[in-house]
Amino acid sequence: MLSESSSFLKGVMLGSIFCALITMLGHVRIGHGNRMHHHEHHHLQAPNKEDILKISEDERMELSKSFRVYCIILVKPKDVSLWAAVKETWTKHCDKAEFFSSENVKVFESINMETSDMWLMMRKAYKCAFDKYSDQYNWFFLARPTTFAIVENLKYFLLKKEPSQSFYLGHTIKSGDLEYVSVEGGIVLSIESMKRLNSLLNIPEKCPEQGGMIWKISEDKQLAVCLKYAGVFAENAEDADGKDVFNTKSVGLFIKEAMTNHPNQVVEGCCSDMAVTFNGLTPNQMHVMMYGVYRLRAFGHLFNDALIFLPPNGSDND
Image 1: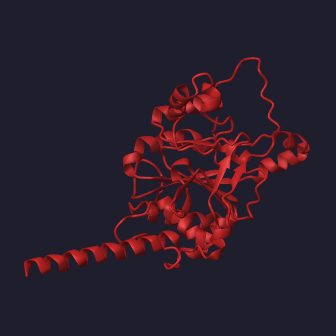
Image 2: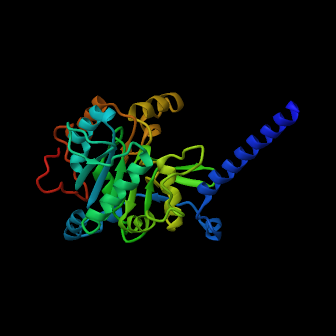
């Protein structure tokens, strides 16, 4: 009798686990349809510098003014030191940057999402940003407080991308059938992708607030699931040499790896000259990056870029 009960309980447990797995996989694979088999992953590259030189000076100035990037930074109270560093450094170069926090924090100004669930925070932040600024900004960049971004390089990368098309860019990762942009390297959405995402946020069958019954799906994977339903697919951003420009590691870690793997070509083996982001930085490293990227200059050397992205009016950026 005991053995029969034991067998019955084992069967119930195995059956429950099997059902949970099916449910989870169903969430991950939703939105595929037949067209998914025909979709090819794109590796998007930055524009050619020679092409930029062919543009007239007036056209370059118009391009500089037309690119408006709204930056979303997701934070929690435990991130207060990183929060301060991000506020004092690279976010000054965004056309507008706002911090979305899990709860009210008196030290810094932020928009309270009233939840510590990262996926719910991300959903609410995107919804808030779209409702308030859909007619003011054409590109939306989301990052964690451990990320350092060179916004001018982001704008340069986006130079020949049309925001009225559905772009979803960053450092892509493959997870089973799901390809998604890692939040650790930052996520870029065009205004068209924001429109499509916003249209799905209130449809739980296509963009659920919770991803699985047992195992929780990370917020960046959840976003990819929702965007697939809207016909928007993850695309990896690279430079002309095929190097990633959205990075999920710090510069220091890349250099260590290059010294091990490419000891005779440390610089070439490290990172792209047009890198947009690095991740995993401490507050002190944020300030060091700010110094190296924006303040250090070689005396007597003229920097003559073909295109200049002007800072927002009233900005105290470097």
